[in-house]
Image 1 (cartoon, rainbow, N blue to C red):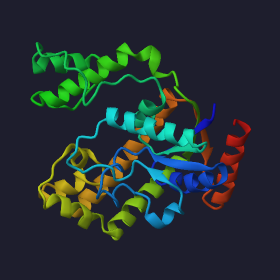
Image 2 (image 1 turned 30 degrees about the vertical axis):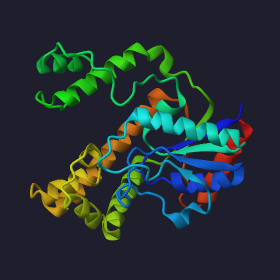
Image 3 (image 1 turned 30 degrees about the horizontal axis):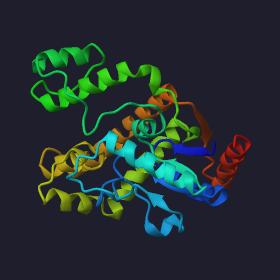
Image 4 (image 1 turned 135 degrees about the vertical axis):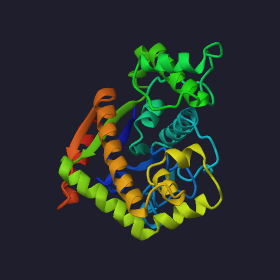
Length: 291
């Protein structure tokens, strides 16, 4: 069976650059595995690859829906598997690239999902009862009056519990590569990356969406977007918004490490930022030795 390569890790460690170099070496084609990069117009804030950076390597599942669309994990699962099978049928190597762990897991493992959201089995429960059920599993900041989010969260918990025995069973032959660096360096990268996004026009990108009065799930949950909405709403200053983006990005990086270390068999590589080609070669040699 032909291998499927996954390249993951926190923001700014070089996933995109590595994926391009590997694709050249192993006849690969790249599938986006970032939950925000599927949306058109969310470019700077998601660090979406630019056209000239693709170096003619085919990329899939970028810019496939509008920010008003409710693109679910189920949608991604179906789309990603279709791309994977198409690439495999052409005797190429699929390379999933991104930091959205649940998307990667849904695509590659026997992870059972229902269309759109999940079946709503809790119509007879009050909001308070649903919240209590959620808290039996983990703490949550979902407001008791937000029934839609409460139901979605409880459905996720029940779905995971029912299918726990199947979740870790891969449907494909996969190699998961994680790029990492020490925490101090990572935080420096995150801070620099956020400042770079601001300089490249992130505020204008978000303001255009804000002026259209769009408050979809993608916008209101996306790091870099939800914080600037708070600024535009007059709740915080621009400086506070930028600092909050950095803080939330750091917290997200922590959650990414936790997810991958507990949910998947990741082989981690410390990035050599002084000689990135060494990192590329180390990863390539590892992959070849396991093909």
